Amino acid sequence: MIKITNLEKNFRIHQARSGLGGAFRDLFQREYRTVHAVDSLTFEVEAGEMFALIGENGAGKSTTIKMLTGILTPSAGEIEINGFDPHKQREKYVQSIGVVFGQRSQLWWDLSPLESFRLLRRVYHIEDEAGLKWQERLIEELDLGSFIQQPVRKLSLGQRMRCEVAAALMHKPKLLFLDEPTVGLDVLVKQKIRDFLKSLNETEQTTVLLTTHDVSDIEALCKRVLVMDSGKLIFDGQLDELKQRWGSKTEVVFQFKRKIGKEELAVSLSPFECEINPVSEYALAVLFTHDKLPLVLSAVMGSFEVTDVAIAETSTEQIVRNIYSTTSETNGVASHG
Amino acid sequence: MGKLYAELIRIRFLTLLAYRVNYYSGIIIYAINIGAYYFLWGAIYSGQGNLAGMSLSQMTSYVAISWMSRAFYFNNIDAEIGQEVREGKVAIEMIRPYNYLSVKTAQALGEGIFRLFFFAIPGLLLIRLFIPFQFPDTLEVWGWYGLSLVFAFIVNTQINLLTGLFTFFFLRNEGMMMAKRMIVDLLSGVIIPISFFPGWTASLLQVLPFQAINFTPSMIFSGALAGKAAFTAIGMQVMWVVILLVPIVLLWKLAKRNLIVQGG
Image (cartoon, rainbow over all chains, first blue to last red; front, top):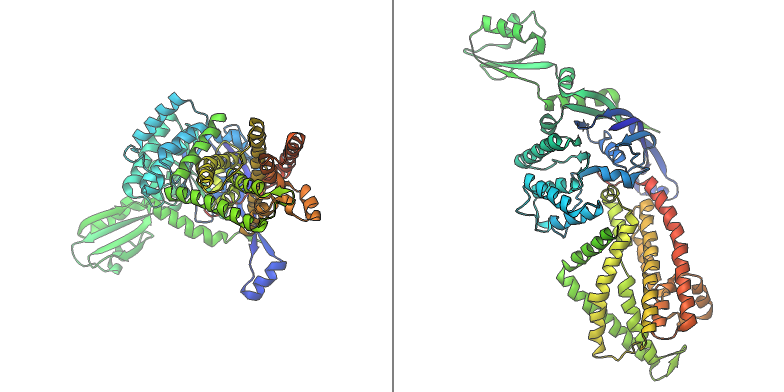
């Protein structure tokens, strides 16, 4: 369904000189620097998949989405989605996709969402009867009924975002792009949107591509994750795999009956490679690789009187933080004169 | 296709109606403009029966009708394109299965029809209570006027599209838009009829598209261009429509290739 080969995008960015003199010199001669926003990106997606594209700010996610949606022209490489070349066959191609930009509205600000929907039905040449039926379903599932008649400018962010999702789906696209759809939303609204996307994926087999900074979005929706850093794809695989690769450490917090020093515990755990951090006078946290979990547990329980044990599974959030911190150290910033 | 453009025009209507104060003040502004120019020209003529081949009563009709035409052909789509490019909203336009420039033109038409019926005609009727106008007495003249007004709209919109398209390359373009607005108002004959310009400028204006925007329809309306002359003038308008299409298509192709979406 989506096939991307060696996709690249370079931008020429004007380097402003500093100071008044510099600004004056810029009037006559400008210096430019080429930035490789997206660099040899290759991946494939099957129909009906839900997958997430994650990465730090400036990693090239948005640029990628804009190329995939036909807005930007790639500098090199090939994109084939739904059998189209997005940029060259833009007007035909966009009939088959829906896009939600979390930070940009596609509704008409001064009109009610209902008017926007009506216009969108015309834009996509949708027959009235089938279109209205589908619209009714969207309104019901996203629970828009109570504010659908108000001008968009009077809606809350959560209400507006749900309308944005409905607007993007008005023409029943086979592929839905969501560019940071949950930025700034409260937990309940996030949940509602996620539930809706899940049911949409199940009933209509809609393929969903999501970019996000919110790890709970990924956990709730996606099996497959793509991680980008400085324009390059550094991971493509299942969420579990991602956890194994970057989140191999497990943390266990032991609560003891009496005060135990860090050194005291270290002695009995000496056969294992682990890190011990004090949590409070009676509690210590032990950090080690997941496969040693039974051994560590039995060693500690055998030698001390333990009142409570808490095993913290590494959260995806933690993993993402790990990825972000390690990759930017090793790769540096991709800038080329 | 037709349904889409009808819907776009309808939406523009609704958007303009959403702000009532704008609407009422619009009528008053049109009335003031027409009134001011009427008294200005009255002072300039001050008793002389004929200036540059136009009588005072012809001039009065000219002023009234040139403002009425302007209500129809005038639009701000260049500024709108500029804003959409600057704020990155153009991204939303590119994910829709239509041609951005045609959509902008349809919106401009919606705005034009709205202004004509809700600003210009009420404004004109209001001011007619105080100032006498001559309206054409034959249906033929009305027909020629209507036709040339449509072409006036197209030429002006094309010029706006061109100025708007430059924003794709310069990102900030307000200066050029302001200059364009003044130039169009001056050289199209809204402020002074073209026949009042000195000889060499008048011949220069013959080879520029601006008089197709206002001078041609207004002259047809006031009866100064009739029969064969009217026909030739409309032919010139059509020629400009075709000529201006070329740079628009080229710039649009280039703009799409170089598009940089601002922000996000």
